[in-house]
Image (tube, rainbow, N blue to C red; front, top):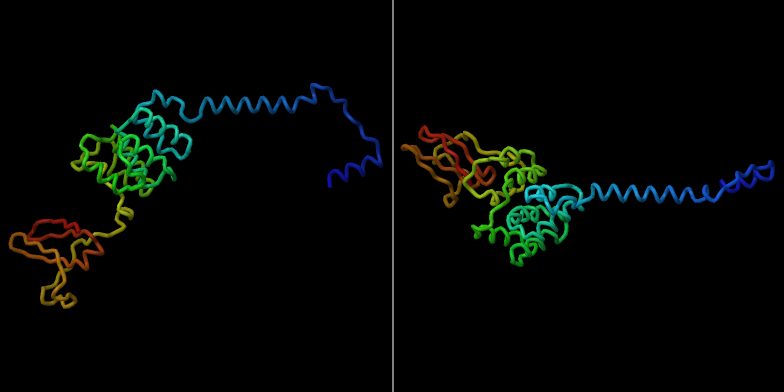
Length: 241
């Protein structure tokens, strides 16, 4: 339509045509060339992989948590190139959450470990549990806390730098719900065994006796809570199921 309007205007009044020199004609191309050069320079200055060759493993593992895929991919390549076996526990975590959305983490695990479990996360967990010689990188507790906090921010309360622990941190996994998503059974009301008519004779219970006082926690109730906090025989107890 603009072309039609322009032709219509030409028929009714003279149009002044500016004198275009060769330099002016080439200016758009020059501007595009300079812009492209600036873009290339910016990418070279801040693009992925800068400093990867000299970064320590903690820094490279931090890159794996970045949202930009090129940064993650560059860090993963450097980890594999160096043969950083201390990255294996973290890569198993990434495999579980499928951070890379492809076979990158699985392929890296195969190369670093010499195994061929591929995407079989359970196989990797079992393999790692049997390997005392494969330990995570130094900042693994805080790193894992940051990773799992993307599911539930409460993870940062349990996994952080300097956390005291007896169990191997790499064995801690997400249970599928947020913190307190399954409410504990706290100070439950009890009835005498003869009054528990809702239970069939063959139903299983968790039984405990402390200082002469006995309690039974039916599995049909524990199934919904998985944990009970109670006081038996004057002693505070916690039952996990």
